[in-house]
Length: 468
Image (cartoon, rainbow, N blue to C red; front, side):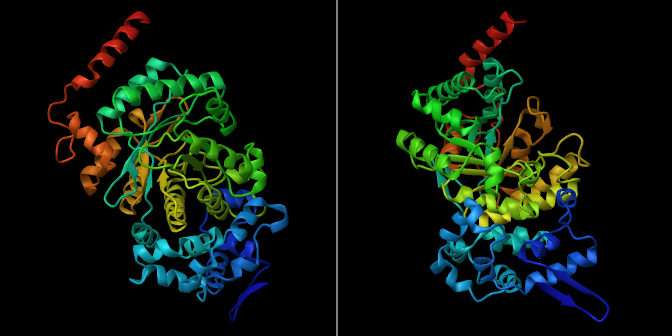
C-alpha cells in the first residue's frame, strides 16, 4: 500500500501498478480503461508518492506477474545490475533530479541504459514536464547502422512512406521518386502494404530493391508485413533488408498480434544470416503506439504509457535499426486531442532513448481526433529539438492508404533548415553527388530532374499515358 496523508486528505494506492496509473498525465485511454486518477488532486498526490519510491522497488514488485508474462521475464532476467549500480540508491524523484543535472552526460546515460527497466523510465517521465523530457532526451545518443549511419548528433533521418491504396507499382515508384527529390528516405523506404500476403509483399520488396540497387542509394527498404510473411519471403530468397513488426508491452497484447519473443528471435537470426547491411547489422524495425494493449483488452491493469515503455524492452532485445512510436494513429479513444498526442510523443521518445533505442516518431493524428496540423507542427518541432532520430515523409502529409494525417517531405526540409539538421552522412553524400542537395544541404537551386532519374520519369510517364 502506498499512502499520502495531509491535514484534510488521504489517498491510498493499493500497489505500484495502481500508483503508476494514477500518477500518469491525463489521457482518454486511461479513463476508458478505468485506471486514471479521478481528479487532479489524486493525480498530484500519486505523483508525490511516486517520487519517493526507490528505483530498486521496480526490481522486486512486478507490475505484471513474472509467472504469466514473458515481457516481465525479459525485463527482470535481462536486467544489468552492474549498469544499474551508480543510480541504484536513488528514488524516482532523485532520479529525475540526476537526469536534469550536468552529471547526466551523454556518456553516463549510455552507460546506465542497460540497467534501466521500462517501469523506471515510465515512472520518472510521469513527474517531468515537457521541457524536462526534451532536455534529457537531447542528451541521449543512440547510433545504429545498416547501409547508413542513423542517430548521429545534429542529424535527422526520414522514413520515405510511399503507401498506395492498391499497392500499384507505378504509384509507389512515383512517391519514392518524389521523396528522394526532397531528400527523404535515409532511415528507410518503407511501405505499408494493402494486402499482407506473400505475393504482394514479395512484389513490393523486389520493386524497392531494384530502385535502391539501380540508383545505388545508401538506404534500406522494408515492407511492413507481418513477421511471419517476411519469414516466408526470406525463405524463398526475396531481398529483405529490415524485418518489421508491431510490438506491445504485455504478452497478451503480443499474442493478439500473433507474435512472441521466440518468433521475433527467429526472424532476427534469419535476417542476420542474409548479411545485406553494408556497414552494420541492425536489421529490425519495430512500431509501437500508446493504447495498443488496451485496444486488445490486454493492458493487465496498467496505464497505457507504462505499457508503451514495456514494449521498448521487447525492441531493445533485438538491437533494431529503427523504433517508431506511431503516436496518434490509434485514435482519440486513447489520445483525445493535440495536447495529449504531443505529451505522449515526447514521453515515448524520452523513454525509448533512455533505454538505448533509436526512436522515431510518426507525428500523426486521425481525422476524428481533436487535433490539427498546428498541433503536429508543435510536436514535430519539439521532437526534433529533443534529438529525435527520424520522422515520416508522406506525400502531402496525407496517407491515402491508411487514411490518417502525418508529416510530409516538406516538413523534413523545414526542420533541417530551421534547426540546421542534416541527413545521415552516407545519404547526404549521395544527395550532393546527384545535385539534389547543394553543399549547404539545401535543395539544389536548379530544380530540374537530375539526369539519374530521367529514364525512370519517362517510364512512369509512359505508364500513366497507357493507363489514362
